[in-house]
Amino acid sequence: MTSTELRQSFLSFFEQHGHRVVTSSSLVPADDPTLLFTNAGMNQFKDVFLGRDRRDYRRAATSQKCMRVSGKHNDLENVGPSLRHHTFFEMLGNFSFGDYFKEEAIRLAWELLTGVWKLPADRLFATVFAGDEGVPRDDEAYGYWLRVLPAARIAELGKEDNFWSMGDTGPCGRCSEIHYFRGEHLPCAEPVCRGVACSCDRYVEVWNNVFMEFDRQADKRLVPLPAPSIDTGMGLERITAIMQNTLSNYDTDLFQPLLQTISRLAGRQYGGTMGPADVSSRVIADHARAMTFLIADGVLPSNEWRGYVLRK
Ligand code: GLY
Image (cartoon, rainbow, N blue to C red; front, side):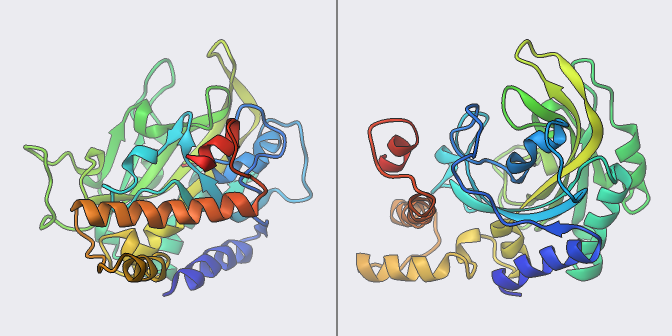
């Protein structure tokens, strides 16, 4: 499938399951001084989760333009050396505002990945929150995963991996990630690979299902949201790499035209290696996309705030 077909397939699947397909919001957050750039699909629904805004739908699906270059979610330093990180990327997401919760979110994710996209079930792993800082282990999500996965393929991790927050304040909750196993043949720098908790290329995080339950206050207290809700995020670039069977996001149809142009202009063929010239080519490809989408959303190079990030 092409990346365009995948994006459409995701949105159509959720539309068929009663979700309103909502257009991506701008990379410049509409009315949120806590955010430099839109960093997740849920940003445009923040006030809906908090009960301050209402929509005429309770289920939504989006393909959201995101930038992760600052604050809690910052991938800038990974761009170039990594084959699967970007500053700008598209996040596919489905949302429930007080409608379905964990059971249905897990069921829908599993159906799309294995039923529609036909990913081999024996290559999929899940993670659930192990319990931390007064928030208990996610017994419920663990139980739902046990319906489709053996216990050996469900990992229990702490708050770094399995508690998602948009920023220092605002909606947050325990989460459950889905990872795809690419194979033992890939290198791992650890003495013993830590599986889904490892940062090597053997396991790639595909999809994060966030069970939104709290509004974190400035004093760190977790206040329950008006209704338990769902917020999910799946990077289009990563799922495209998996579906197109490429190790690198940069080898998919989303990046190859850019890298071919960079190769032509540089007079040197991009080779997909960890060498400095290929790392630089990935940085140029990533930053060219980011700059283009920032300028399209009205940001201009300047000496301050958003414009300074673009200028750099
Ligand atoms: N909002 C879910 C995620 O960014 O992973």
